[in-house]
Length: 115
Image 1 (cartoon, rainbow, N blue to C red):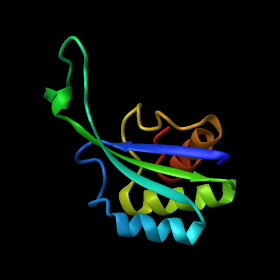
Image 2: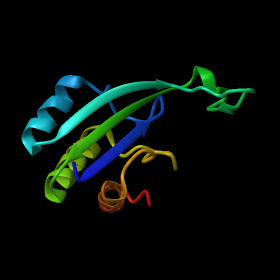
Image 3: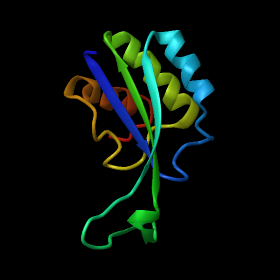
């Protein structure tokens, strides 16, 4: 895959519940691979706080989007942002490859003005 984008959402970030069925429809529409993962915070050797909670208690929802064509990635990201909005933290794109991150930043800026 030429493009890889990871959108990380913290609790309360998405406008609505993220559902695998919705992701599957977007993936089929744009010819993409889209995955969904829940990631729990983990800090070794100490505690860190975020959102007024220990990081270990915070769960992130991560949507991974992969594809070979910039236009497909762009279309899939537009659909995701329209449904859920762009993720809200500076860490939102960690794990994306450079080409995927570049497209994600463009789409987010055009739609949400986040960057």
